Image (cartoon, rainbow, N blue to C red; front, top):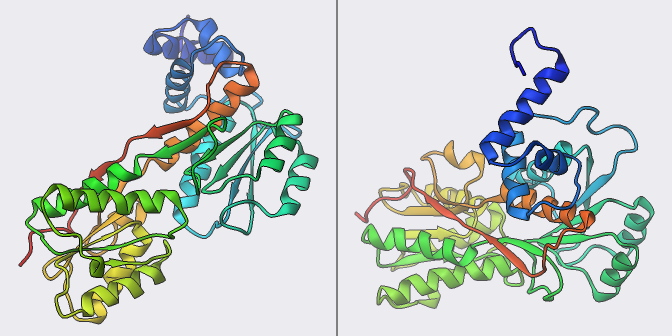
Length: 343
């Protein structure tokens, strides 16, 4: 079998799939099962094969045709790069499997509007990914009766044990961010929290508190400011922290948008980042590498979380045993130029 420039499209496609099978240490039939969403493939193997197919740029012939099955991904907000990373991840798995992706906005933080459930039932999607949300029991029952599977991504609360969900290691990310600042020598570290009713926001602050306690540092409630995961929340909370008489030498903003707000607060107060105040964010959105100075942040595996959620839908539809409960993907600290030792 040849994959030379003179090969036919079919030969090239088969050669590509053969390489993927070899790299994944599986048979060609297993690769075929993954491509066609058929059962009989372990979830870990399916994820490995899909990743390799994506890396080689393989798209199934005839992918995403009119009338193709749709995966629906639901957000309460769509106005930032964070949402786009999730859309890209879900879209990659959908495209690889010959499906389309539909994006809807619920308009409420914790659960889609009541009208949404009627609309989604009329659309009859292949499956649903709900981001930072949940579903009332009645809606769950309706979707299950119609055999429309659903998965939660970073759910707003603690989902029921029978509901599959995918989340990041938010507590560990908050711990890493704060430990980094402690290791640099900071002892007064402020934090801008996220919405108090969102589980991932609470987990990041909990990780911050755990790091301080582990280091034998007092947890000063005056250094904990409320936030909303928007730039404005970081600006307001950052201003309150940096205007205080005993201001912190470092601030952990629990997402990158709020970190940009803290940058703005520092500049308004003629404070330099990082010379006068170090700042650490959370999410590792693309703009964080191009902020001035580049932002130290915690990498949140948004793309991977959405891909994993879409794979769970495929496995449920294929009849594979996927189990229920929470799947957690790791976070990692990305050190850039916004964090140094205290002056």
